[in-house]
Every structure is written in structure tokens, then in C-alpha cells.
Length: 524
Image (cartoon, rainbow, N blue to C red):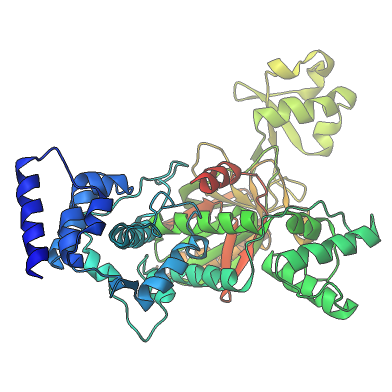
């Protein structure tokens, strides 16, 4: 012991005089010193930078081990503790926490140096928890944040775990405390524990096109994705398994391999888990909603009206087609318009309606359109429509209110630069379709009159002598605007995965907006 202490003093004096020369990790490991003494020699900026710790984070790790008197956190008698073994497994399966699989791979734990491995494990855990709190992407971008440590972090508080609860659960809880976030995070964790992250993609056709190959390839896909354990599964259980898959992918549950089921089967589990991680990452930095708001999740084709933190109304919606996608936005609902006029967007007037007019000038009358130029109504019969060009269309079209109006009988108005609204539609049958991306960008809402009634009822409940009656106004069949006493925030968002009844539900990335994020996610 005296000899070891003497060697340590000599090394210390030598390096105090020769500051430019640092002992290598290999040299430190060979010294007959205690672990704390070796750690004290190891803990300097060059060594920490060498194993991948960012420069801004270096002081925090030095401080952490100094406060521990250089004692290890994950090593006992030169072996990993039980906690360390669990953590190493967890850190090799980062996708279960909604994090990129390659994140922190620059930090190597299993090296020849137990000291390097000890510090690297601490760094990985710290970076992981920092990501859970602050997100991987820089807010509202597809740029990845560097791995670092928050200045408010106290590492020891992150590294302490309760023996009575799984460490993985405790790590999840170190992220946001928001209920929606936690429900999603635990649902994703449970899914990844149950199903393997399969990277295989498929080319499955609907069974009505090629029954034999469709059934065979679907079995292969479900086996690879972990839904079945035996390719010889009987027909009844095979169809039930398809129904389970359909539920988890927000599809019509009929046990049949249709176009939409085939489409979701063809996507790899790896891609879907990446999409889930991207949504979870958005939740980490998302601003909290007001207690009353309307939210539309475009890939889900659903609108929900939340009042005082309780969902009181939900509606199927039709969104923009892939050629005219609905934008994401945040605004405030200011008024409800009954029997609205439809001021036709220029692109629709010039590209879609003009060809009809050139074939049949009665098209305007049949569809209840009027023509305006510089806000003055023009006699449509006086116009030679065949001479009008789409790239120089000089008119504005307005469709008068009525049963055939494209906006239906009601419009929910909120300002936005895209001129999109939530509105009624005369074609109600379209709400029964599974895939409802077919509008010009506006959002058609099923039972929108019931939504309006609930909005107005809540808005007017504190007004004395409130005589407003929506049914009476509808009976009058007049263009009427009802201004709200209190504006309602509306959020139009794009999240391709959600948590429902403690399960992860995958939606189609209908506009392919996640592809750029997925590419970055898998590269980092």
C-alpha cells in the first residue's frame, strides 16, 4: 500500500511539472492504485473529449466524480453492478424510449478500460435523460441537437434508482410529466418489448388481386413483425391476427387484406418505431394546450373539441388531398357562419371550373356561381369563356349559399394565411371512407352542426338573457355570422402515431411529411 502511494505521489509531481504530458489510459490502468486514485488521474479534459463527451459537458462530469471522491457509480470490485448491467441493456435499445438507435454510439462502454467504461456509462445515461427532457430535434426543425448536459442537471439525482420499480419505467418518468406524454411513452415501451423492430419492407398486394401470394406474404410479414410465432397458423387465428394488426394501424377491422391493410403491412416496423419516436420527441417540446381548444390531427382524420380539459365532441374529418394538402397551423376560432358563401380560390376557378365553362356556360347557373370583376358582379352570359386563359383568369367566382354549396350549411371561421376552414359538406357519404384525403385543403367536418351547437352553447352559457337559437337561425336560411364571445384556440397538427387505450396506434404518413425526419433519425 505504501509502495502504491509512493508511485502515485511521483506521478502527481511529474505531471504537475509537465502539464503538457498526460498519462494515457493504458498507463493509468496498469498502475497499482485504487479505483478512486486512477479515476482522479483519468478525469481531465483530453481524456473525456477522447471518449466522446462534448466540451461543454466536461466540467459536469469532472465535478460529479469529484463530489463522489472519485468513487465509481457503476463498478464494484472491478465488476459491473446489477444496475449497470440493466442500464447497458437499456442503452442498447434506445428505440423503446423513442430515441434514435445510433444516439450516443460514439461513447464506447465495453473497452479495455473499466474507468473509460464507467464514465461513458454515466455520460450515456445523462445524455439520454437530457434528450427525454429537452428532445432530440431542435424545436420545429429536422436538425438534431448535440449530446450534452443541461446546466441545471445534478447527475447524482439522475443516477439514483428505486429498487422497487423497473429502471426503465423510472427513466421514462424522467421525461415530461404531462399525462399525454407519459401515456404515449409507456405505450411505445410496451410495444417494443412485445414486438421486434423488424427492418424488412414488403410488396404485398390486396388479396382480391392475388389471393395466394397476398396471404403467403402477409403471413411472412406478420411472422417477421412478431404478430405470429408459427407460419402454420390456422385460418381463424390468422384472420384474428390481421384484425389485431388493423386495430394497431387505425384500419377498418375486418380481417381482410385490402389496399390500406397491405400498405401498412408493407412498411417496416423500424420505420414505424422511428415515426413513433419522432411524435414522442414533438411531445417533449410541445407547448401545453389551453383547457379549451379544438385539435385536428390530419393523419387520423379526426377533430376533437376539448372544453375545460374534457373532450366533449369528436368528429370524423376529410382533409386535403396529397396534391392540395392541408397545412398545419395554430389559430383562433372567431365566428360560426351559417349558410356561407364560397369565395372560390383562384387556382380552382382558373384550373378546374374554367374548362367546364368553356364546354357549358350553364355550369355557373347549375352550381349557383356568380362572377365578379373588381368586386362588381358581371353578367356571365356576356363573357366569351373560350377566349379566357387559365394563366390569365380575370374574374372572381362566388358560390351562393344553399344545399349544393361546397361549404355546406356551416363554416367555422379562423384566420390563417392559407384560407382554410372547418366546414360542412353536401356529400356526407365520404365520411365513411377509411382514407379521407380528398379536399382542396379545407377540412370538411362530419356533424359540424352539432359541433357548432356545442361551441355556441358553451360560449353563451354565462351571458344573461341569451336568446341565440341555432335551429331558429338555420330555419331562416340566411347568410349569418355568429361572433364568439371568447375565441377558441384551434390546432391543426400532423402526428402519424398516437396512444390509445395504452396501445400505440400507427397512422398512415399520408403526406409523407415524416420522411425527412425519419432519414435524419436513422442516421443519428
